[in-house]
Length: 120
Length: 130
Image 1 (cartoon, each protein chain N blue to C red):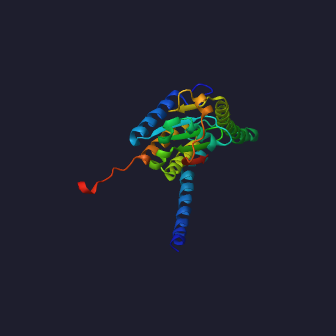
Image 2: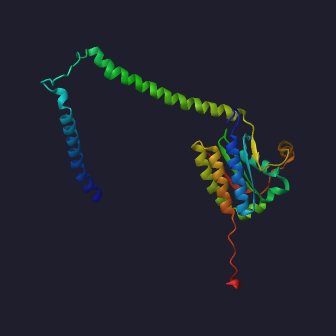
């Protein structure tokens, strides 16, 4: 019940916050819609439909695609490089025996060994 | 890191340092193998452990196969008395979670220290001295 009540009080706060944000944007953006020009301002020509679409739709979409491609491409390249290096890499044995290869060939598996296994 | 190498020289040094640290901490020997194994990773790890010879009994061997994404911890007969399987499993989980985040060297280094901490024998309190 407590969580329900909290939601009920939270909703008006969210509504009020949204209204406040909209009001703030409207007020601060008022000069952009001013009917009378201030002295010295020089508004440019309006945008055509084509320019508007280019500026607000095509360019953002292109930027989105370029950035997404960079992110995906970089991580794909890194993982394929890591896979390639793992394929060819020589094993490393810290604290291993002298002449590890020969020792491994003649070695018999440890019996009754404890420990743990894992995968990731 | 040069092409075709699993660990950079700095990462190797870090692992070696932590191996020594863990050895000093608990008196067991630690050995870390990073590289290719075969399809039976557990069997391969036990063969590696067997290759350690007489030292094997008091050695904890950590085997990491980055290609197959497998981790094996093998404890020798003497080492298993100081380091039980549950402690190994715990350290193993910590290591594999680092590995899955892409941190091979860091996971090994931290895991070895963790094993060393678990294997530390608690100082026996002698009641007659109290």
